[in-house]
Amino acid sequence: MYQTITMKEKLLLLVKIVFPILVTQLAMYLVTFFDIYMTARYGTEDLAGVSIGSSFWVPVYIGLAGILMSITPIVAQLMGAKKKEQVKQAVQQGIYLAMLLAAIVFAFFYFSIDYLLAFMDLEPVVADVANRYIFAMSIGLIPLFVYNALRSYIDALGATRVTMVISLLSTPINIFFNYLLIFGNFGFPELGGAGAGFASAITYWLILAIAVWIIHTRSPFNSYGIFRSWPKLSLSRWSEISRIGVPIGISIFVETSIFSAVTFMLAVYGTVTIAAHQIALNFASLLYMLPLSISMGATILVGYEVGAKRFQDAKQYSWLSVGTAVTLSFLSACILFFMRSEIAALYSSDPVVVELAVQFLLFAALFQLSDAIQAPVQGALRGYKDVNITFIMALISYWVIGLPCGYLLANFTDFGAFGYWIGLIVGLTAGAITLSVRLLLIQKRISAHSTVQHYATK
Image (tube, rainbow, N blue to C red):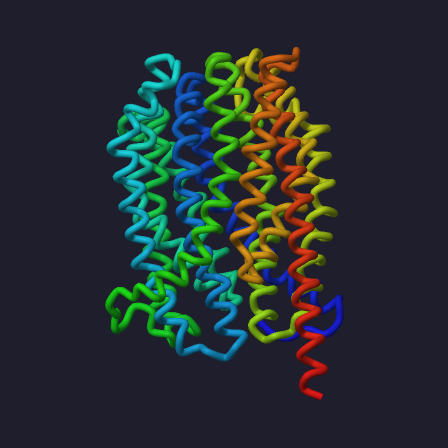
């Protein structure tokens, strides 16, 4: 990374940082995307089971893995402040923490998933698929969490193209093992939805091996000696990672789990509704990788400028990220609106599922703008290491405003299942507004503090 002067230079650097992140996010998400897509081609009941399983898996994994995202602003600020000697310890302690988090998630699913599924009014075959899918995915927990820590380190050095290449390799690997294990090709067992989980777990182990090899052998990563001279556990470093990461993780959990909560609530509408809802959510989530990637780029660039005490540049990167995401979100909304029939037909040949999915996709198009604002604003706030208030705002927006609104619309109006999606739109919009106000206040406070310091030195 380097200092920029003009807005044109900033935009070019933003694109340079974000494009590889986008490709990386798409490649990583395509693991889940093809789990859903290929399972949908296998059968509606298996799709519903994987949908339920993913609704448990994704928020828990993403929420805890979000803690490791704190490594990015920590390393970015260390680099901006020219404290490179502290990078190694931060990353190594992050790897320790990643392994602990993986163990916690595994224990949670191992001891609780049977009880959680029993509370839901699911068809037995759907519950069985969900159970086996979650178990299979859990085999890949350790590599997935450790890779997230290593990826945060690589991205913080500005080498986002490296994680792009690694992640691009994950997609064909996952498709290949899905083909073998879901459908039972070339003599492999036909596992249906559970096969998608095993394929993903194998993929996670392979991409971790690739990442470790690159960091250990390639410049500039090997110069930091990440895998040499392992230190003892450092509670102070864990405290720093957790102080920034826990609010990030909880904030992400709050946002992603509301989609899972909607999936659970839609279970009463039957297997077809769950399948149609998952189709719309799966494709909308694919498009969400764009504002999410811009958000991650904003964290890196804002964190780097804050570390260098160039606060005006940090402010410009913040709003440049928002403007770019909003502009591109219009294209995403158009794709969802005008191609919703074709998108639904890609997933399923069941005409009832397709017809319902088309209607869900219409609502997915409506929350593209809110997503495009709240994601990069959150990324910029993480670059400032402002995470606690962000978590509270996200909690209120999604769970106090969005979900209750959806419940009321679904159960006391004629909207039915679609009421929950309207609630999602309301929650995301509330989040976009409140987080934007928070970013403005943070920047105003920093600007005032910088002005006072400037005159004090005269």
